[in-house]
Amino acid sequence: MLAIFKRELRAYYQTPSGYIFMSLFLLVGGVLFAFGNLVSLSSQFTGFLGSILFMFLLAVPVLTMRLLTEEMRMRTDQLLLTSPIKITEIVLGKYLAALFVFVVTMAITILYAVVIAIFGDLDTSATIGGYIGFLLVGCSFIAVGIFVSATTENQVVSAIVTFAALLIFWIMDAIQNGVPTDSTSGLVFAAAIAVGVAVWIYFSTKSLYLGGAVVLLGAIIIVLLVLFDNSVFTGFIGNVLAWFSLLKRYQDFTRGLLKLDSVVYYLSFSAFFLFMTIRLIEKRRWS
Image: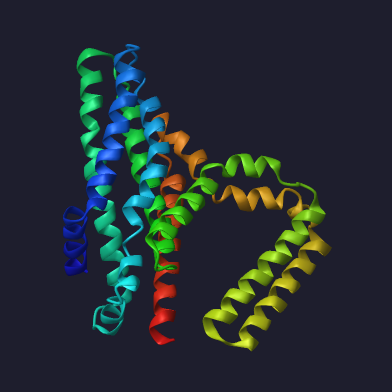
C-alpha cells in the first residue's frame, strides 16, 4: 500500500491535476477570505469554512478523476490486478494519496485563522470543530470520487459524474423535504430498495437463488412491519435519504460540538464507498 501511495503522490505533483486542485482551492479560498473577513472586518471564520466547502465540491472531481480511470485508459490496471498486491491496498493507497493532497491544501488555510486570531476575535472551539468536520466531509467526498473513477475510462466523464453525485449529496436536505411522507409511498420505496439490493447481489454473485432469497426476505420483513407496525413506513423515504445528508451533521462541528455519532457516520460513509470500489474492482479482476 505504501508503494501505491508514493506512486500516486508523485503523480499528483508530476501532472497538472494536483496543482490545479491546490491552486483552484487556494485562489478561491483566498478571495473568499479577503472579502468575507478582511474587507468586512469579520472574525466569523466558520462562515469562510462553509464557503470553501462548496468550492471543495467543485475541486474534488479534479482530484479524483484520474485515480482509477487513468489505469483503465492506459490498460495498466491489468498489471495491478494481476500483481500480488491486494485490491484493498491499491484502493487505500490511491485514496490516502488524494486525502494527503487535500489535507496539505486545507492545512495552508490555517494561516487565515491565525490572522484572525492575531488581529480579531477567533472562536477557537468552533474553528477547530469546523476543521474536523471539514476533514471528515473531505474524506467522504474523496471516497465518492474514487468510486466513480472506478466505473469509467474517461476522465471527463468521471469528473462530471463525481460532481453530479456530490451535488446530490449537497442538496439532499432539500430533496428530503420534498419527498412524500405517507405510509404507502414509504412501503413502495422499501419494496424498491429490497428489489434493488437483490438485483445488486445477483449481478455480484451471479446466483439467482441468492438474489431470490433476498427478495423473499425483504418481502417477509415488509409484510411483518405492515401487520404489526405500519407507522414505520410513515416518513420512511425521508429517513432513508437523511442518511446521505452530509451537510446536516457538519453544522454541529461548526458550533464546536464534536459528536461521536457524526464522526462514526462520516467514517462509515467513506468506508462504504471504499468497500464498493474494492468490490467493483474485484469483480473486474475475476470477470
